Amino acid sequence: MKLQGVSAFVFRIFDRWGNLVFETNEPNFNWQGYFKGEPLKQDVYVFNMQAEGYNRQVVKKMGSIMLIRQ
Image (cartoon, rainbow, N blue to C red):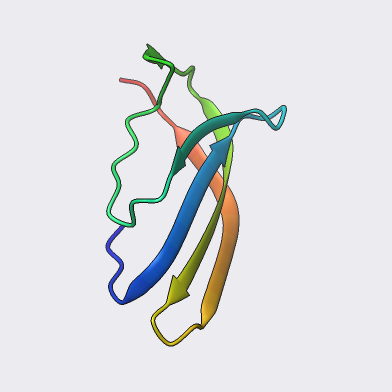
């Protein structure tokens, strides 16, 4: 994900029970599917993201991510 013109950012990923498994404030992050150094199981995870631009416009997104292990 590449974002530009962002003054504030938070991205969180939760497991199916609502436990937080990943969080970052870095807009150009790369999640590898690990939690506390251990690989998470192949499953569907929920994410939410909030970003604020330099123009103070706030963008909120929610959705799901399918983690696939090879």
